[in-house]
Amino acid sequence: MLGVMTIPTLELNDGNSIPQLGYGVFLVPADEAERAVSEALEAGYRHIDTAAIYGNEAGVGKAIAKSGIPRDELFITTKLWNDRHDGDEPDAAIDESLEKLGLDAVDLYLVHWPTPARDNYVHAWEKLIGIRERGLTRSIGVSNFLVPHLERIVAETGVTPAVNQIELHPAYQQREVTEWAAAHDVRIESWGPLGQGKYDLFGTPAVAEAATETGRTPAQVVLRWHLQKGFIVFPKSSRAERMRENIDVFGFELDATQMGRIDALDPLDGSGRVGSHPDELN
Ligand code: NAD
Image (cartoon, rainbow, N blue to C red; front, side, top):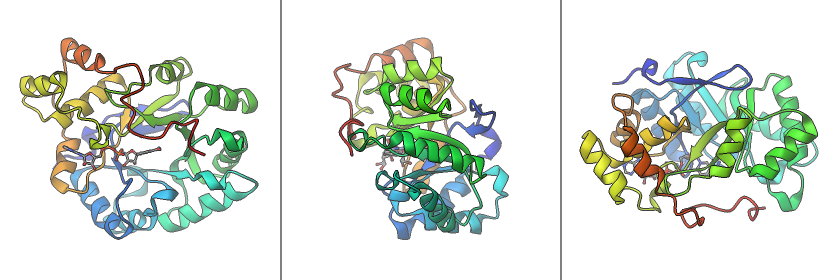
């Protein structure tokens, strides 16, 4: 079993640190979450990415409580759902999430989507600033924000998010957002790091040949690419064997040629996207 010490941490722009690899629980059913998260913690994961809309915060909380792992060794993220941006709804939403998770505070709280047609993401961001000031989360960030959304929250509040969690994988590299993030000291978290299995990354020669050359699996090669790009990842699998495979990515490196071939996989026309467009989900 790998220990937590093998997972590197990255510093966030607010001085907190985050394990660069974690375990995501999107589409893990509520009644399976406790088992899955317990197995992930057993495999050595210490960073868990959930969201109110996933409906599994209570299962995540049970696994955390049962594990006996000291709270300061864990990094827990949850997210504010789209229908709770207005008024004091974000304050109620974080209270409900903490209750389900059985925690006094999370490590990272995110605005899940900008929902631009509703025009209330600046208000939601102001609320998250207050939630952090009240100590209910250590860090705050956003998810699925494009450059205009990011520029607007910074201009209107003066507070830069610690992270932006976006769909990102070799076939959809989001270069405009990642360049903005690098220039503003915002960490990128890649969701769907393996293309959610909807995009056949593993069958591309760049990935398949790097796997043969390194003696690793295609999934390990893709995760390694994210890590070497400086992105934070939390691949999801319900199977303990794959959880162990996905965390075992710190004992090898891709060389410049292997990285360059994977960098070249983005068709640049947006066709690699597997999820919703942030301007269209409201
Ligand atoms: P992912 O790219 O991690 O793909 C998960 C799928 O890949 C699994 O269901 C499994 O079928 C397959 N898989 C996993 N490990 C494998 C392996 N070793 N070999 C072969 N196949 C493997 O996609 P995801 O779960 O959508 O993304 C990861 C996490 O990102 C989520 O669990 C969630 O925490 C987060 N997320 C966030 C948003 C957002 O809007 N912020 C959206 C989607 C996901």
